[in-house]
Length: 123
Length: 182
Ligand SMILES: Nc1ncnc2c1ncn2[C@@H]1O[C@H](COP(=O)(O)OP(=O)(O)OP(=O)(O)O)[C@@H](O)[C@H]1O
Ligand SMILES: [Mg+2]
Image (cartoon, rainbow over all chains, first blue to last red; front, side, top):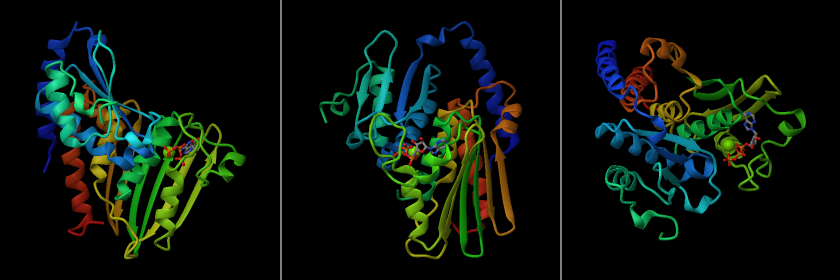
């Protein structure tokens, strides 16, 4: 059972983190955008979104923002995700699963190497 | 959609797209009827548009010519012997309601409501989401506006907070369910 004490502990930890990040330019953050229209949701966008969150949280990556977009225009390729690393070209991933999302966090977001087998055009 | 909670996520995305600042989700089960509504204070729809909104060829999307969210939700409800309605007013907002006969074999399970809510909060943290979850006379209400004051400025969309919320919501939903998942 989650209690208010648990929340207070998290708040304390987060405050320290936020102080550490004071002055960090958040325009340098990495953005992960998940397609969340009906086509995306029906194809499995929710578990993909949650896998990104879990992995980002497990690795304590404070420079990653996970957000949503509507229909990215290619419903057959959903779940689709776009990853924006500042200074690099956008990478579009298609037909993702929760496991693929975790791999993308490890290899692309942490180590800077896009996971080519899920990149659009390679599927 | 394999879970009604995915329909809820999808219908709430309509509210996000309509630029709502407040979205209320009701999940109410009583007397073999599960009523789900999503109401928002977004930009609303005109009478003419509303009249054809359950038609798949009605959409304001530009990436494709069909809008499936509302027709799917309506079908999911009506296939159980339940009902569907949508009310809207330009500049005021929209309320979409679907009722499902609980013991119908055609009814999809509700699924993971906590994850639907955290998905919405994480991707649209600026919106205030309220959940009213009721089974018979047991009720759980969660309001991100209240929760944000508790957070004292810590972003609600931070991964740790979202993880906390997922468990917190799940715990409370289970209590209201009283041992029987919907
Ligand atoms: N809450 C709302 N507020 C304002 N307009 C809405 C709302 N819900 C639906 N609409 C309008 O109705 C249209 C049809 O909605 P529907 O969910 O069926 O399809 P869609 O959102 O266009 O596409 P899809 O759901 O397939 O991703 C939308 O394009 C939008 O113009
Ligand atoms: Mg929709």
